[in-house]
Length: 537
Image 1 (cartoon, helix red, strand yellow):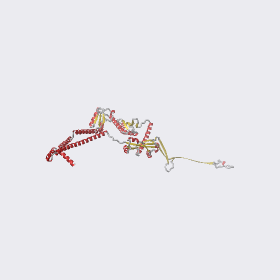
Image 2: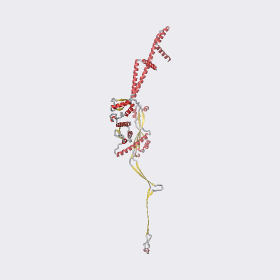
Image 3: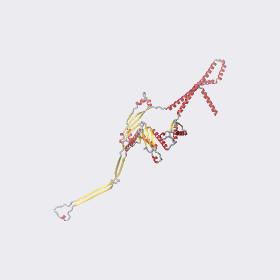
Image 4: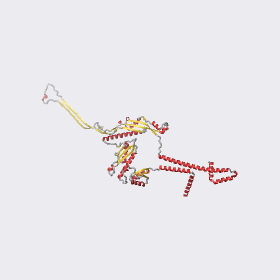
């Protein structure tokens, strides 16, 4: 088996040597130069594609700490670079997480910690040092998440974590958080965003409420919570916050119902909600009979007074009344008297209803809503060019000439939808709609420098390979042509000599041909092959 392999290798080397010897010195130099360029291009391409990206993971305060970091990284086989002063360590990006976990498990802060503001080196860390590092870690995590919001440019977080001395009081104390924001201009940021940040911070810290979270910005505005100073201001702030919440709810309802129509791309809503904060207490008395058998209430008290009297006139007692007189005397005179008085108290059924009206109710009849809606009409550059509208003008000139805003007619159905969604009467709702043109330019392909380098190198390699193949084929063809010409010239010269020989000297001609065949068998075979190819081709 080994002998066969060796024989095959020898034959292969001989063929390569035979192929190489066919080239002229200039061609050999050219092939070598092309091969060197191809190898160099491949090396550059490999270097670009396989270049390792390093990230900073540790900034040590002393050479002792740096030595410990180096031993840990070497022990885990992590690839790293160290600065000239031996204090800063960089690891391959793919091994960043492993390196940070390794250093963190050994109480070594990574580069994410601002250790200059916390510790002054030394590995003899105490529990208090660990709490400080944990505080820095949480602050960094909160800053990273808050900065990811579109409206936030930078965020700085400061935490006040209560000392854990093992007591129940310390365990129940919550962490205080102060966040300083630098906002991006042109991107909206409101109280709802600040409340969302506060809720996230409270959850991340394990606080039950957001009472201990304060959010401010670069202009000194307190976004969360609203600063309260005096009781009257506190009451006014509460009323204002309740009004703002009601207006925010109305705005969201209007946006939701209008976006649901798919008619508009942008909707802005302004609400002026009237609220009644007065306190009212209403007492209502209802009376009824005890049951169906009575038309009045039960008798609770009654007084009755009744008096009757009769009076008459008689004669004088004794003998005087028997004396005779000579004239007539009327003796039928008398009086009658009667009196009646009644007082009654009844107890009908009584129902007393006492109602306390809620404060902060919305007065819909006095509230109003204004809506500004925009509908976009998309105009693409490629469509305009296909329609032939850019003849004689540029795309920028076309955009300037057709960038007018068109006011749309008011739609009563949309106004009724807003009224039904909010409860505000239609007379207090105003809706203005416009149509704007949104121009979309032709997308230009964005190619990075790295992609360009790769494409150029690939093109160079393919071009050089094609050139080598073409040159090798051309060289082989030239060699074959030279051999054919040499054989044909030789035979032609001998034929010319034979033409001068007379027919009676045929034996000498045969001798010349036989001698030529014996001396040049390869040339004769090549000539025969060429003739056969021409005859059968």
